[in-house]
Every structure is written in C-alpha cells, then in structure tokens.
Length: 351
Image (tube, rainbow, N blue to C red; front, top):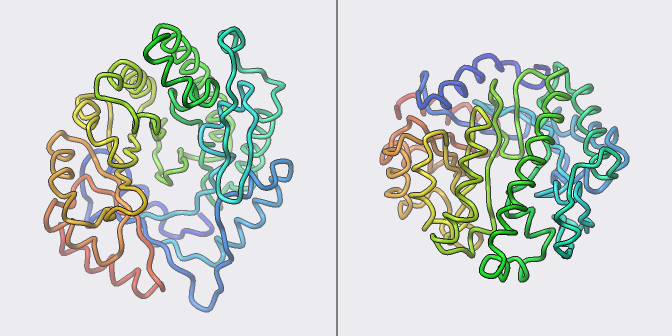
C-alpha cells in the first residue's frame, strides 16, 4: 500500500485481534504527522460538503495521506461519509448538512412509510454509489475505502418517523414499528451487499467509519436511539435486529455510545455472534483511558468479546496492565512519528 509500507504486518495483527489474540504486541492504530510535513485539515465531511464532486474529495484525502504517518495498525481509510444513517435519505428523508454533521429527520405518515423500498434512481443513493465507485477505483494500491454510514435500524426509523412520534409509537404502535424495522433491515443489507460488491472489485478487505480492517464482511452495528430506551424496550425494538445483523455479517462491533447505553451491555454480550464492543463515553465524561471503566472492560473481555478504545498514548500501558492486552484494539494519535515508534516498541512489554 502506497501510504502504508508495513500493511501485511498490520493485516496480520488486525486479523489476530478479531480472533481475540495477540501476535507480538497490543493491537494499536496510531497516527502522527510525517516529518517535515504540514498535515492538511481533514474533518471527514468532504463527500457531504461536495456530494457531486467525489474526485475533489479523493484528491484532498490523498494530500492528507501524504502528510500522515500511519503507525502500528493504522491505515489510510477513505470513509464515504454522507452522514450517519444515510439509508434514511435513500428512503425519502431530506438531508440537511451542517459544518460537522448531517440531519435526516423528516417525519412521515405511516401510509407513506409502509411502502418504502430502495429506489435505484434515488439521488442520494446514486451519489453514494458514485462516490464509492470512484473512491475504490482511485484507491487501488493506495488506501482502503470505508463503506458509507448506513446507520442503526431504529435510528433510520427515527429519521423517517420523527424522534418524538417514534417514542409514542413504541407504546401505541409497536407492531408497526417492528414491521418497519424489519423492512429497513432488509433494505440495509441490500445496500450493504451492493456497495460491498463495488468496493471488493478494486479493494481487498472491508472498512467503515470505525476505521478497522477485516478480510471478512464486517460492519459497526449501532442504535443511538437506544440511549433513551429502557432495557425492556431495548430487548423488544433493538436487540432482535442487532442479533439478525450479527448473523448476516461475518464480523460485527457494537457502537456503545454514551452512559445511557450501559444498561443494555449484558443483553449485547449475550449475542454469540457479536465480536466486539466500541465504548464511547460521550462529551463531558471521563474518556476511555479512565480507570472507572476497567470493571466494564473486564466484563466485556470475560464474555469473550473484543474492545475498541480511543485513548491517549500514555493510557495504553495502564489499560494493558489492568485489563490485559488481548482482545483490545487501541486507537490513538501522537505528535510525531518518533513517539509513535517509541509507543509501539514499548508496548511489546505489555502483553
């Protein structure tokens, strides 16, 4: 890979991580600026900012790659980002782009929602297909292409129905919500299969917004709406669909986003096919390197699941010493490549 000379070794360690193993050191994805280079700003919103000019986004991404040192298991990942839960746009929602996010909430009546399907002529679907095709073509031998953020099943339903109305529906129209979610799930996988086929024509392996590589069919599974749900409602309206997606895909990581999702952790850990948990504490909370989460990390590992943690470089050792290095994928960033290599060299002592 042009921007990642030790890619075969990184693939070996990432494959071992998926299997809950360690090769010679902890699995660490770490980047820094290259020596003597100024790293251009990259906020990941190029495709949303210029939805009809993916070539421009690829050029800008390659400028960033040229200025970035990809250490450990880090690799250049061009994620086709048009907003979290873009499947809602494929089904008729109207995206609204702000500087750092895209909103899809477009409340619809049930008579319209009940007829949803993937329309090949939908503008946003065509934009995603074009961006994915061009990225895969340009990325051969240079970088990986991360599939667009398809979104969580109930999150997409929220975009189509509206947040407040959907919450009422969970109590008054539960049957309709479940029927809608099963339709969305089938459409979700239809989108995944079509986009995966485009990428695999040019690129070896899969990636996504979480920035992890796998040779097998994988994707981050999520339900941000679950933050507001009781365990009972989670088991009814979220867990069946998470289980189904884990069964349909070869590898999965659940995006556990915020304190409100912690009550659902044991239900998630009960899913045999789920491979790992990504923990994101949320704004204003102690971040992943904090010792207050170590008992939760041990629960996850004892259940046989992996962990994906974004930490500061100096926190990697403490987590490895207290929790263990096996099954944990660390994502971090250093100020320069010397510190990157020092971190990686020292980490051999922490297994």
